[in-house]
Length: 157
Image (tube, rainbow, N blue to C red; front, side):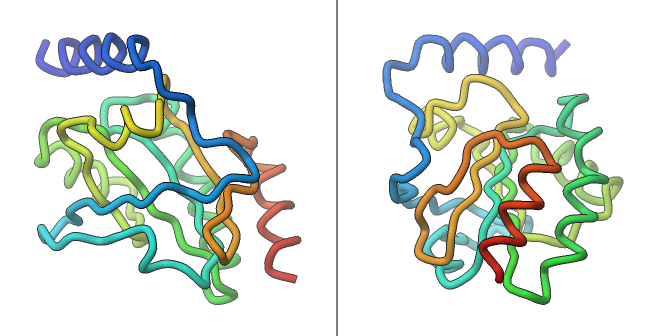
C-alpha cells in the first residue's frame, strides 16, 4: 500500500510540474544527491565521461526489467569511459538498497527520496534516461537500449 501511495504521489507531482524536461542539445542541470553510503555525489563529478542518467525505482517493473540490458551496455563500455548515474525516486531507502543488491549493479547509485530532482528535470514517468557527452551536454532522451548503445559507441570513438 505504501508503494502505491508513493507512486501515486510521484505521478501527481510530476503531472503538475510546469517545467520542461531538459532537451537534447542542452547542458544537463547539476544534480547532487546522496549515494548508498550517504555521501553526496554530483553529476558534474563525472564530467569527462559519457554518462547515462537513469531515473528509476525499486517498485517500477519496467525499470527493473531494463536493468539486464543496461548492465550489458555498462559492462561493455565502462572501461572506455561510460558511467551510469542511477537516480532512484524511491521513498524508502531499504527498498532502494535491496533492489541494488538484487540487480547486482555497480554503477553510481543516488536517491532522490523527496522527488526534488525528478521535479526539476520534469520526469513524468520512469524509467527515464538521458545520455550525456563528456562535456555534460544531453545527447538523447529516452533512447531505446539499441539506440542508446549505438550512441554510446559513437561518442566513445
